[in-house]
Picture 1 (cartoon, rainbow, N blue to C red):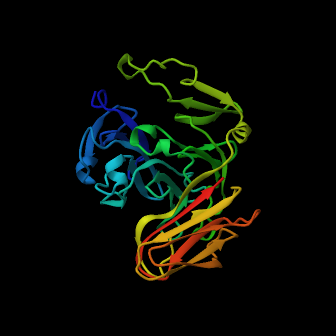
Picture 2 (cartoon, helix red, strand yellow; picture 1 turned 60 degrees about the vertical axis):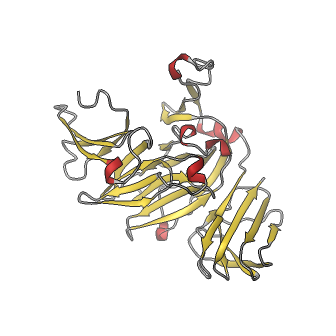
Picture 3 (spheres, rainbow, N blue to C red; picture 1 turned 60 degrees about the horizontal axis):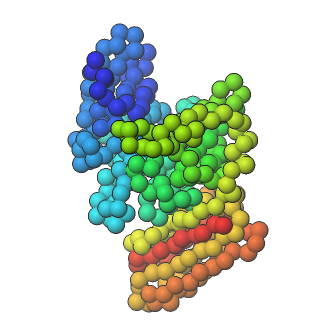
Length: 354
């Protein structure tokens, strides 16, 4: 009965008693321990208070997963106030059994791991600059941030991200749906680096979940909910189950999008940006601007193997409070790209892939 009125959004393996208990997470931040055999249940935390968010009805939690000795949870709060930098209510946080640690105050929507098959944890989210992939590698106990394009700005609100997922499909690989784009993702992170990531296609579906079933890929849509009877599209065919093959995803929209490591962000001289995905896209263009009163040199580096070895591609000088763009040659690509500024300033580095 403790869970009857709870909008459950996540079930996760228990850290200390996995043989008898599971964690149950509610959208309003209620965290429970449940015994699936006896149905005994007790609330152990109010994450709105623990993680210092605005409270029930304002911040919605989205997922929970246990792997690598930690329980990871996320919430996807984001609207115009977050975009303008006036608030930061999204959360990605972890619990080691004793204390909670907030990893990000940005919106995150999905968490997944294949456990010992890879010893990694993946979490997907976004901010103003780009979509984001956070990766935990057990080998060194570190979280790293990778940035990816947004295929559409229609997902830049908490209500429009219910529920992009990250799931194991087919044979020991992960399928990731993030900000309107499907990706293939390897669970392995050799040398603690993500290299097995490539875009598949773009779409405008709002997916509730997907899985493999009897050799098929099954996608559950959330495009038309009842909304108290006021949704005239309720029961339309797009709000149902889709059956197909994983290979069918390559028949959807061409991989393209925009984003980058910085959007009017304060950057430190000599500090490289987060890696931004470059592989799997066609035509590419980089836009640079800053607010410094002197010219700024932006060093553009690429990691073409994907294992964290960076090579200088070009140095682009942008005049005082100025702007420059660079079009990459046809056929040029690498796994990751990053940018470093020669002066501390407020800078923007955005890439458009078409």
